Length: 224
Ligand code: SF4
Image (cartoon, rainbow, N blue to C red; front, top):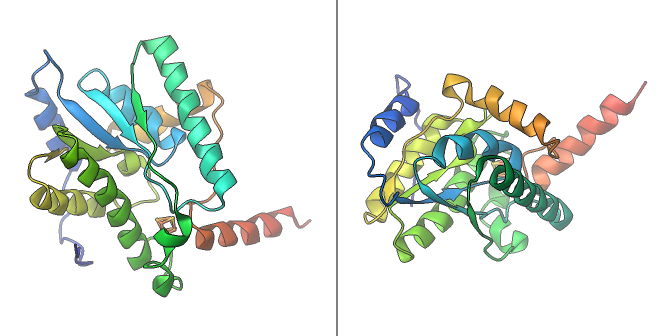
């Protein structure tokens, strides 16, 4: 699936669209939502927003993350958050962890390794993870799909929503829930939840390329 890189001339407020969709949801039973989540910290706010409205299942499709210990650490942090939210808010969130295959995942991305973070390589990476999860949602008969990644100020929410819209045309049995979770102070609320639960917060996006850039940053900041 090809997503064109051209930016729309005017930015759409996708959180407004989200609000309109959720205002008309049935509540008994709640619709089933498959939520792609990249890590615990980015999931804090989206889960508190979505769980009262949907029966939420997280799909942790993140073979981009390098090294494997980091993938495991982020997954353990996500599990910690789910336990905290169950204890304190009564949210019963399901979690699906597909197989991890960093080597296979990176093959289509490596030709774009010199692209700056936030460029073509990242758009392909968002598309690959969202499509893996969206396909699963279609196979398993979920009602809705979305991703927590729009909560990050470092990432382009317009792009996530363009990808989601294109995927909803490819898998029409699952509705795409447009979102921009960073609006309405979503990122700030998420940060305060992360701090409340003392969750591990990574300092790089995920792939080996971003990991090596983080090592350089860490080395520089350690210098007197
Ligand atoms: S920097 Fe992040 S989004 Fe971009 S390719 Fe690496 S893991 Fe994927």
